[in-house]
Image 1 (cartoon, helix red, strand yellow):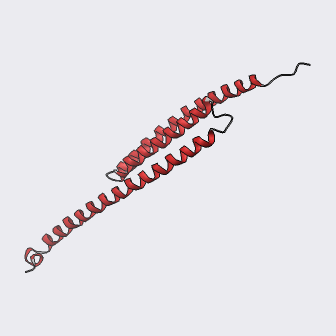
Image 2: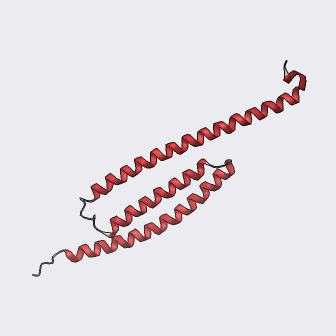
Length: 140
């Protein structure tokens, strides 16, 4: 017995839409899961990269300075903010939500970059001033 034929074309279309929505919801869940797993793999790779950078920076003459420590902290903060954004973006409900999340992230990052640039400039000036004091001056 064909239920679609007995219920009429409108009932069949409604049932078809319901099934399509269920399939789309399941596909969305699958895509979110894949995106989250991918983000986790990227996070692990970046953590490994920063560990390698820390080891390399340990051999740099600037390694013990506030400038390097601050740059590393800012890099870590920026990557953390990016991953938070991506985690929220994966869960966006629709295009409007997507655009809102991206706008908020970009505004926050631009403010953060301005603050970081200022702080790094001040640290650089202090580091250069301190290094200049260590240079012996020949008296003639």
